[in-house]
Length: 392
Image: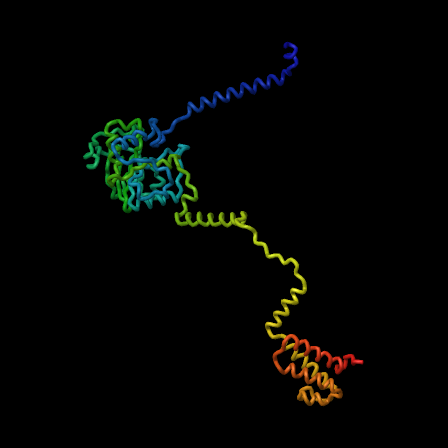
C-alpha cells in the first residue's frame, strides 16, 4: 500500500483535492444564497407570506363572493368578469410581467365597455400618458382631517391602519369621488371611465396578509372588492405577477376559422391516405392475346360494309376503266356507255365493258357482284391502260 501511495503524482493529487474543496464550497454558498434571498412583497393572491394577498382572497371566498384568479393577458377580458383587482407589482420585482401597448389598450377597452377595475398602487408614467385616467401621486403631507366616504362608513369602516412606509397620496382628478383620506391626503378615489369605473387605492399595503387584520382594513377590502352586479365574478389579476397561462395560436384564432382549418386538415389526411393505401384491386386493361392482322382486316371490312364502301369502290373502278377505254377508242370519257362500247374493236371487250357499266349503274352490289365488277375493270385496264400489259 505504501508503495502504491508513493507512486501517485504529487501535483495531480493536490489539484484534484483543491477542485473537490472548491466544488463543496460553491455548493454551500449557493444553498446559503437561496435561503438568504430577499423576499419582495408580491401582492399576489397566491402568496401567503406577509406581502401577499392570500388572506384577502380567502376572506372574499368565506364571505360568499364569487372570486377567482385571472391568469391571461388583458385582450382575453370579457363580460363574464365584473371586477378585476389589479395590484401594481414592485418595479424591481423580477417576477412581474411587463404589459405591452396592446395589453393596455385591451384593459382600457374592457373598463370603458362596462368593467370595474380596482387598482392598487401607483404608476406616474401611466398617469402622465392618461392611461385609464389614473391620478398622479404626490408626497404625503398634513392636508387636514381624515375622511371616510358614506359608502364605506355605512359598511362599518371607522378606523384605518395605513402602511407606515406609505409616503404617497393621490392628487385626486377632477370629477372623482373621494372614498378615503387620512390627515396626509387621499388614499382611495373612484371615477367613471366610459361605461365602467376605476377605484384607485394608492396604498396596496392596506390589504396584505400582515395588515388585513388591523383596524377596519378587512371591512374596507370587502367593500371595495364587492361586485356591482349581484353574483358577479371578482378576480385577482395574477398575469401581471408572472402567473400567465400560455395561449397557443389554435386557442386564439376565431372558432369558425379553427373549425375550417381542422376540416381542411382532415380532408388532406383522407386524400393522402387514399393515395397511399390501396382500397380495392388494381384496374388492369383487358388482355388482347392472340390478336392477328386477320382480325384487323375483318373489323375494317365490317366497317366498310356498314358504310357502303363497296358501292363507291365499284363505281370508282368502273369510272377508271371507262376513262382508259374511251381514251383508246378516241371518244370523250363522259360519252354514253354505248358510244364508248362502239369504239372497241373486240366483241368480247364490248361485252365486258357493258357488263361492268351495268353493275356500276345498279347502285347496289352484293359481294359476288362487287368481286365480278372489280375483276372486269381490272381486265379492261390491263388491256387499254397505256402502262398495262396486253393479253397474249
